Length: 325
Image 1: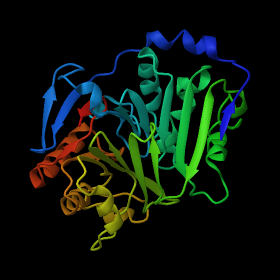
Image 2: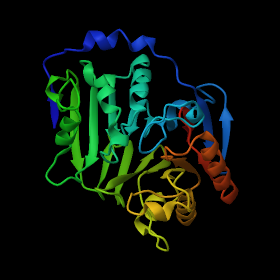
Image 3: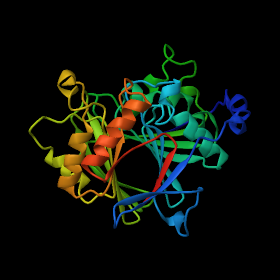
Image 4: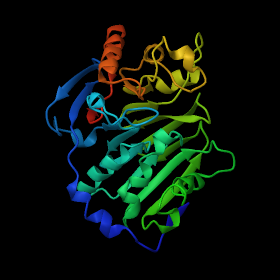
């Protein structure tokens, strides 16, 4: 459903701040999927033909709650938000606290229209939505896709709740932008950008559900599998199928194997399980993601080293990291 509000209460206050934001730190990487290697490249445009590739940027890699402390700066403290650029268009995965900073960058680049794919509506995946400047500016649009996991609630109902008067000073009906709220059922397949992007969906094991996205475009495959809990000794065959031959899998690595039994029922996984599933699926690389807020940089760095030692396809996602497939 599309809705266009008629008033614009915040445009001036938001416009005057757009150009004042600092550039985020950038680590641009190119994944060579034939050799499954990952190398750092200097600058925003490492090679010819980048405009036709898939560019991925991490704007938030933390799970549960954001962490604004000195010893979280290497990997980043913002919660779940990933940018995907394909054919000059922008698709966003989740609306965690990294989303406002992505929004600032999009406005500087003159990008007005975006598609937002929500994995689910827990706080660490929605915490940046209310501060995403696109929703406060006329002639800007956000098309929101999400699974219908919440009884009779529609996607619009869930977005309205985010902007409820008891939670936020500006309500849904006062937004001057164009919002599209589109629901689907997990397991559905749909297309974006006039068929240039194909999206497969799958329900993950998480309280109230969480959607895994398999995104196919330009001959490449990205799988976003955050917030999923595995069962020890069992294999989620549906998830393995989603990951099949993927160029990159972004996977929930919230806990270590040692602490996982303590948090059964919380809906999260480990890097060990992610590596196991990626190998079964023939995936080429795995980005560790959704780090526990209890893990500072030293801890995440040590866990990343363990994962790399187990499989050279694994690496730790960092806020500001860019990957080109």
